[in-house]
Amino acid sequence: MADKVYSIDIEAPVQRVWDEVTSTGRIQRHMFDCVLDNATPGKKYLWHDKPRKRVFVRGEIVESSPPSGGSVGRFVQTFKFTTLPDDYSLVTWEIVAAGVGRTKVTVTHTKLNPKGKTYKQIDGGWPSILKGLKSVCETGNVPMKTRLMYLMMRSMSFVLPKSTKMANHLD
Amino acid sequence: MTPEPDQLDSVWKALANADRRHILDLLREAEHRGEAGTPTGELVMAFPGLSRFAVMQHLEVLQHAGLVVARREGRMVLNYLNAVPIRAIYERWVSRFEGRWAGALLTLKRRLEKVPSGRHTPRSRTNQENARG
Image 1 (tube, rainbow over the protein chains, first blue to last red):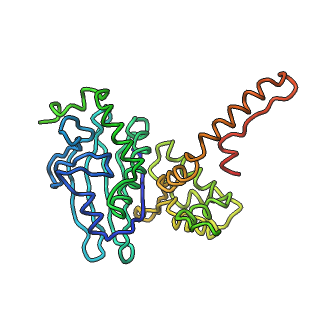
Image 2 (cartoon, rainbow over the protein chains, first blue to last red):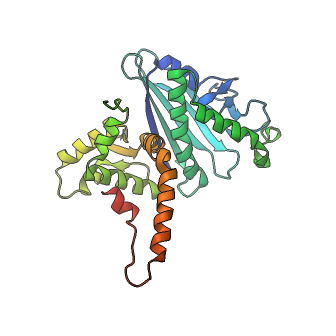
Image 3 (cartoon, each protein chain N blue to C red):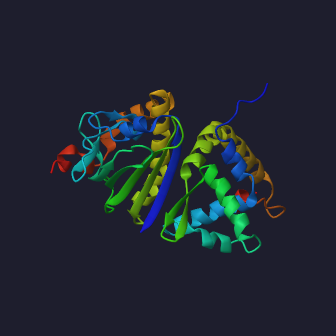
């Protein structure tokens, strides 16, 4: 089983970053405009599109411990792309204050099969997500270029496989 | 006109040393083999010509630049390549110029292919050679 680690420094208070990462029921700009439907430990979650038609990632929230007084905030979730046959992997967000108004975010993705497609795909995903998160927390939005890309992705959603359909994930 | 300070300065500085680039290569190769992080001791052994202290210093520069993330696992420190700053460099520099580069390379390719074969075979450098400067 392989691990991958991604890290970024953000010029924003730790609470702001934590709130963005764990926000539910609204678009997460950094997460390719997906909506996280739940952030409660022990419960299943979906990362779906705004119209609730397509699901891209599913899993269970394992832990949600907000940062407090300099301690590391931990948000842990099992993770599976609905488009891929790979097993559930594990994503750990560590969010910690790194100076005044500065936050370090580290995503550790473990329980990955190094031969699986998830292992390859996340290398393209996490750097974009973390850079998007930095942009959202520092400026309020992702760059125009990224928004145009999202628009394009939305218009192409009809090419997505059936496995992404919401009806398949309402268990 | 002075250029504006670049947020990526520390990344460039970290990359300006062949040993440090080699460390990144080693981490990437370990990743491709599916290993979960590379122990510092293994990196030290990969540089028989350098002291443990020198390798640790290189690691510190790489960590400061965000290119390497270190995690403590029991008595071991495991090092991971962080793809985020590399992606930032790509977006800031490469993608901006690649259209032009691609065009220039195509022109070069067409020209070289016109050269009668057997006289001189131009061979492009491998990625690894490039990475090690």
